[in-house]
Length: 79
Image 1 (cartoon, rainbow, N blue to C red):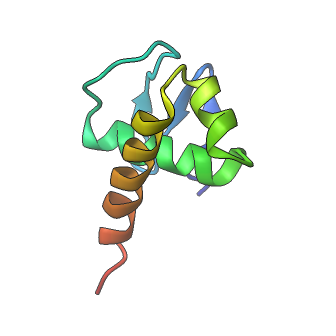
Image 2 (cartoon, rainbow, N blue to C red):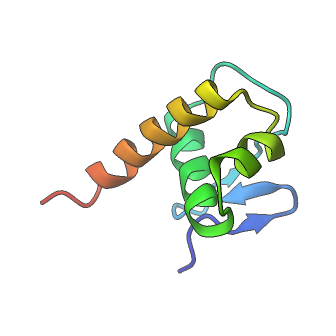
């Protein structure tokens, strides 16, 4: 299945849960949202600048979310 594809303004995660992530800056993202945002960045954006602009995030907040999302995603694949 395709993971991280945008569906109706939010994100579709690999668990089939619709992630409603608005473009407004929200300081408290869940782990699932951070991972979904990381996958969205990985699959659909060429730069962190365009990603941070899309989600209306500061660059530091964007990098923190992507770093945490990457760690969460990679933890699933460690055997």
